[in-house]
Length: 180
Image (cartoon, rainbow, N blue to C red; front, side, top):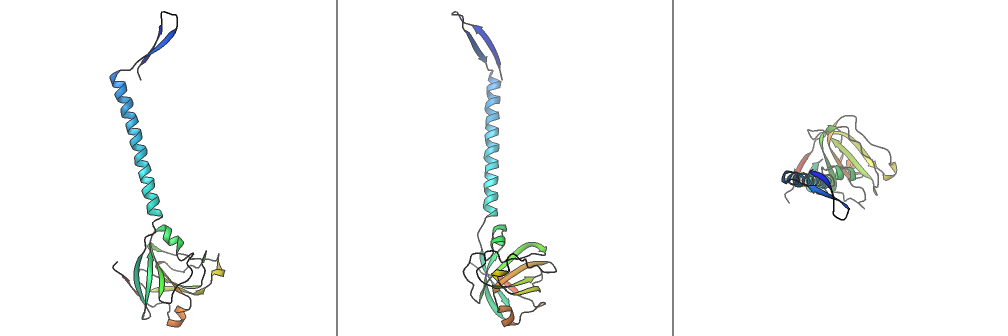
């Protein structure tokens, strides 16, 4: 970045003289600008990633199961999928939470930070029930409830609804997204 010269002053002191050419100054400015741009770009990417991961936006939908309409919160982000109903005080008989996953797999559920019992119903990609856990209590934590085959959707509803409505493995359901 230019050349340094030592020069002896009249009083005997040495001084350093920098000879920065115009090209060197432009290079330094350009280098700093590129470096600053990269930092800003990386910071924005990290910020957007954090926002996307912790997104808390849910939407409402209706699930019809055994002739009963359930108003459900639909969750499909990593943060909401892991949070679920944790921390909620209760769930009405006609309410629930529908978990929508990106690909079919054996998704396990536990009762961490749950305050009330629930029924858990796993569905395949054709909306057919493949597994049911009835009246799962918060005291079962840390046990993990997992179906034997792959599911794409999981519905959590108030405990006792599966038995009350006669819901069984093999039953089908329909989901509707409500307009906001």
